[in-house]
Length: 168
Length: 397
Image (tube, rainbow over the protein chains, first blue to last red):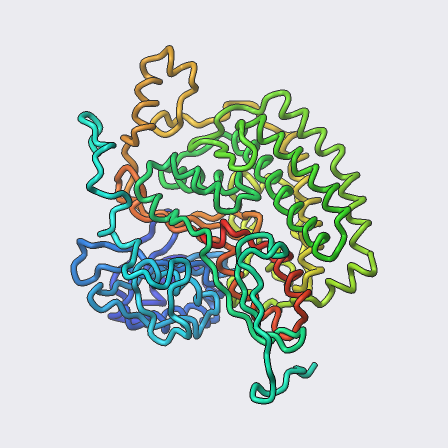
């Protein structure tokens, strides 16, 4: 069996997903692959079930908001880990904020349930097919998604911290 | 065993609110239980009572100020959170920490792990009705806090260490206290273990309570002692060694059935292993400095700030968050008290993180709670929760 390297994983993904693999990079030793947002369940299932790669563990999932990336403002980030090869991989799927839909992966991992609810709570990403998609840590009545970049942390009208030398 | 619950239509179920402030849940969790007599049919969980939006706050703070946020996640073992965060930033800025600092960090992290497990296991005893063990063990958590106090000046929310090393070297008192701890704790710990481990009453209460299979545990994203109790030997310290963990000789205890007894036993054995690690680290503590040469990130010693221009400038720049950081994305994880504690840091080169996401092990594995207690008695649900060691601060983030 060939040694499993990041290059090998990338080639395998490219073979299987072809044009749906949009970009890749390696940062601090971890392979990061961007795919078409319609293939998120397929990609994670492929990585999990492939007899060589065996990314059996969903470490983490979260979203990142890039307001300047018009048309692809929200990025869903999944971290997976293989206990067999001890490699980790980061998968990214960009989705537009005007239509923030992506398929749920709760069908593959129970662990995704609350993490997807948390992502919905903070970023308003709607996970199609999620069994119980409602806010988890914030109050149900909240009508905005607080971790999006347009919500500044402090009230921008306050001036008690404004300083001639240091700004803000 | 066949589920004793009859079809819904024939039954009147009782709804019981367990929490949010029930004394037996040791934290602010709400579980709305649907009960058939004393048997749990279904559970609805509510979390978020102490949510503090750390991920949002972190987007406005310079890196060194984020440390105090990490304290408040798993506050039973805050040094692990602090040091995990320092290591994430060190990975981003690619700086190698001197061996001495790494060993000191290992000592502190293992002390924190012992403190974390002391709380969890002593409380399992309390929840089964054995208060005695708790009163003995809790004194030793205080002694660990005395050691923290010598190292960083704080006890609970420690803000220990700095980006680039430790804020100060281990002083003589700290070394003496650690040696005393290693000498005296095993005696008390042995008494605690002999009080519970083979105690028939305790065993009857915890064996088979709240079990989970290895397969389900992995599917639910379990890590740490809870996963190992189910029989999977995943430990970040071994899989992805950080801070020189590869230098030490220790075992990873695992269980088989993933029930409360196995979780209790795994934590007990881990405390023994942690003491072994601390002993080795202390005996082989390398000479050298306790911080790396990264003046743009490591806060200079205070006496230098008062007397040296350079140090004053760096101090100023660090405190004002004016130093440049590389652009990039880093994921780093450490073995926290409850499992894999991960930090996903996206840096755009600005003064604060563009995005910081904490992988909080509690939040992920607490989802499995309804499945683990379904069909069991109400009193077993309490034990299952305390043996999972759900920490409210880590759960809600």
